[in-house]
Length: 127
Ligand SMILES: [Zn+2]
Image (tube, rainbow, N blue to C red; front, side, top):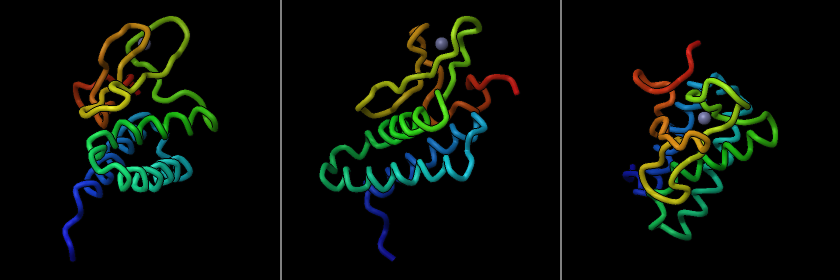
């Protein structure tokens, strides 16, 4: 078997990170996971056109899934930092860059690295 190409490795990593955050938010149902797969298929085509973009894949897949969830389910992931006011979703920053993080656009704070919403020391809301 051939080793995975760097862009394919990046796609696998992106899928794993986004799935980890979906699990942390208790939204990793079968149809939600299929949204991640749709994004991965689309981004596989995208990175073939632009291999230099491989390190941006995780942030892009996260944003694709956010957009798809917003249409079908609602905001994700909800901000765990702000205790009051309207519930709001976290944003991915940078939108197009390496090392993506979830940030709260209201408080302007980094909440967690992508894939770490449910990690010990992360900022997952109490169950
Ligand atoms: Zn917030």
